[in-house]
Image (cartoon, rainbow, N blue to C red):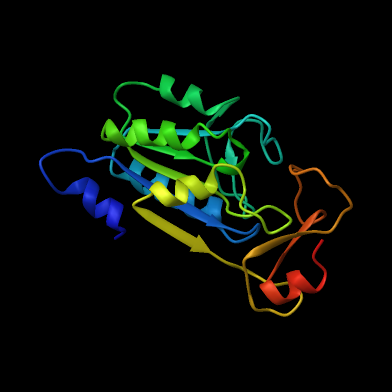
Amino acid sequence: MLFSELHFRTGSGPKGSIEVICGSMFSGKTEELIRRLRRAQIAKLNVEIFKPRIDTRYNDSDVVSHNANSIPSTPIENSSSILLLGTDTQVVGIDEAQFFDEGLPDVCIQLAAKGIRVIVAGLDMDFQGKPFGPMPALMAIAEDVTKVHAVCVQCGAPATFSYRTVASGSKILLGEMESYEPRCRVCFNTTAY
């Protein structure tokens, strides 16, 4: 059982918390987010799930993993929209957090202060190996940070970097295996930008 699951179930009442699931592309971040949210639903907790409106790779509204597991969500433009959720919400899931604005950490703090368990998943680094969006701040304020790893397609070592295989200088380029591949530090740095 994760610290936050134990923390939520002990004490005199619901205790808010922030959990972050991070790593490179193809590391299983969304899969882990869906697993935790389904467990909360099985426990009959009221769950709300959000994703950035720009992420339409697999589905316009559902959160979908690379393994095709999915869970219904609400696509939103900015992080402040999350604060409009229902008053009986006990767990909030947020996917692709790196695409949200810099206000997301404050939104998560407000939710946790209300006793809500907040589970956030996102890329910790961009295609250049630099911290991505609000993820560093979220990792700093979280009670629990889980870093998951993919497998380097070059050498088979644990991969922590998302190497972009197509020419584009844009910070945000939605794509899958046609645009990115997971790489370890050594393989990433041998052909880094």
